Length: 142
Image 1 (tube, helix red, strand yellow):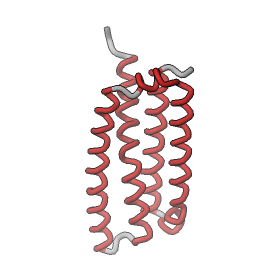
Image 2 (cartoon, rainbow, N blue to C red):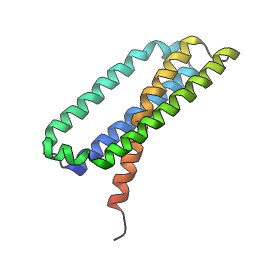
Image 3 (cartoon, rainbow, N blue to C red):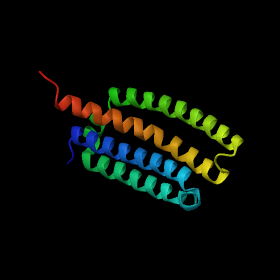
């Protein structure tokens, strides 16, 4: 059985990794759109693996540890992550529109980039905040 702190650590690490991979894909798509833009289906595969990790670890932890891992603090962070994701999305859409208007980026690169950044924003925020909180609770002075 996985304890609640370990489950929180696993979920935070998975979310951070997922968000980083999505943002990395977005950056690489802007740099080399001919190669990376057609590989957008890989993001769906990564998302499926991410869901499997969450489901499997949640099942292994049990309902009591699952409830402890997703407490009021995690719910609060989740609401902050939604706000971060929304703000990031409209900012990226605005910048992409400006780049498209100037002809600096192609449509083939802009749309996968916008989707990847939007999809990865929530997980990146949750992962970083969760890992920071996990670290601080382990290394706080008494």
